[in-house]
Image: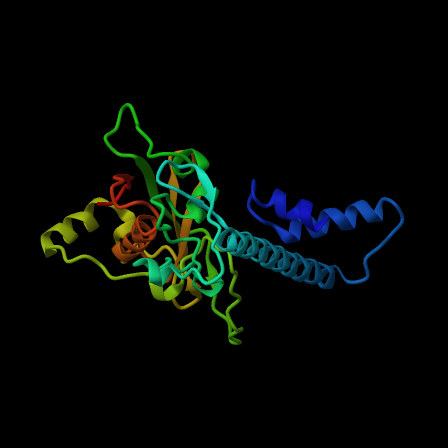
Length: 270
């Protein structure tokens, strides 16, 4: 049931209250009743949250195990792209041959979001959208870019302030950027910023979309590929859209693709 709810939440807005009410009605028609409806809703929400935490940790452990196994494998790709096995005799030392073997990254050093040394995009991006990042460098017919992404913000997804601050729940595999990686704004002339603020309501902090007095996170900003796959998200903590959120998302994408790839960006605020 928890797996079904989590999959359903990928296609519609998550609503634990609706699920709790539906289950209560389903059971009531079969002669079963729930003593306290509010307690059941809370327990269902907690169970769903921790189930997703366990699934996330399982996926992260499997990913690390696969990477460690590949790093320890005796197979290596030679210059012709053919896998071969190098047999090292006893007493044979690479340092005596005039070159040292390149060390494999440790599991603790492995970061699926960063591009590997083999020239491919990061494993994280390849999993998010194999069409954009899974194969060789794309060639788009109607664009000079190799990858096209779009950015936008949503102020309907907010998080209320609480008198009690819980410790942050960190997911090992997450689409959200770390709060300390939001970056800084680029230096633009005041005239450019003023014109942008007048042209777009989303950039005007005077038109408050979410009050900082009631919400710690005022909205979300996401970056998607051209196949509508979410690559990264960031929590916004300002009343309006700030430039550094977009720059942080773009920087994260660029850190996971080869340096010779060009990226086309679609954004309604420039």
